[in-house]
Amino acid sequence: MKKSKRLFDFMLSLLGLFITIPIFLVVSLLIKLEDNGPIFYKQKRVGYKGKEFHIWKFRTMVVNADSLGRLITVGKDPRITKVGFWLRKFRIDEIPQLINVLKGEMSLVGPRPEVPKYLKFYDEEMRRILEYVPGMTDPTSLNFLDESEVLAKAEDPEEKYIKEILPLKVKQSLKYLERSNLWTDFLVILKTIFNLIKI
Image (tube, rainbow, N blue to C red):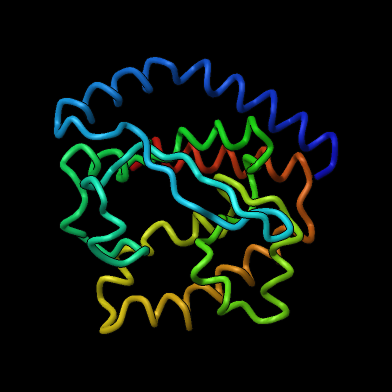
């Protein structure tokens, strides 16, 4: 990662964490009041150069949800809690990933990190995505905001994800990354915020 991009990520993630302290407090209380389970959910993802790390999110599903169904979330997944539904709707569950950005495991803008299970389906071209630091958002993420609903309509959601959606997402992300800079990243961040506000 370029030093300028790392500094950009570090400063904005630090500012973001400070600004969202009230959100952390309110969301933590709501999650605890609903089922008294863990506030945060950590899942193993594949990052830069194939190095694995744990991504942080507010927990939006029942405890031990990973052992109760697919790794991908489809439509109105019964594992999603009442509080979790609203956190997902407004993407609030993603805010703790600012911690990953602060640590240098992620960038504010970059390809979404995948779970290790699906890495075996990457061909040589798709594996080029591992040469970039994964991010909280990118244009591809914005294009696939309805991914869960699309998968819900598929006869085999996981097969559709592996064979159709995953290759397309990686291809789109690579296309953006090849021409990205701090200015385009800043515009993506603004567009992401705008999309959340208008939901």
